[in-house]
Length: 138
Image 1 (cartoon, rainbow, N blue to C red):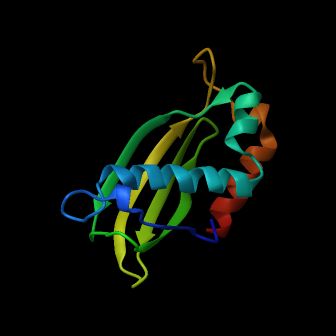
Image 2 (image 1 turned 45 degrees about the horizontal axis):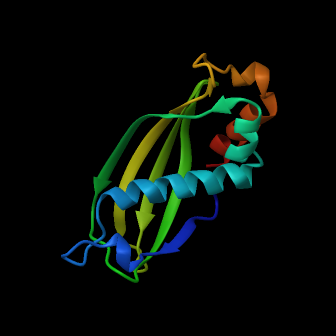
Image 3 (image 1 turned 90 degrees about the vertical axis):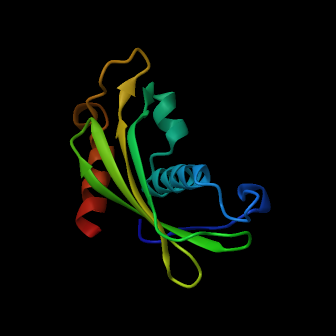
């Protein structure tokens, strides 16, 4: 994703120490992923309307620096791998000082609502082409 997802840390996202609670980074990853899909031209709602869901298969986060209320966080997202059924996304979050605060990744499967694998290369080839183009530009 060329342009990062940008957000300000909200007070309710911090703990009693005034630091962002670690679970919020996972929410920010999802927010960036939804924006990425929108910008790609394949919003989650449109995929779900076609009967395709995309559950998280795995997720990892490596926390590098604390964030506090009011910090501006930029989430950089890139597609690391895609085989037509599973997509791996990488994330890097930076604060307003350009310090990396978190790196991570998530794996997403593409399934039909009944749990069977969606073979996107056959079912939505234009989605696969857009992902391939994104990977080649990133």
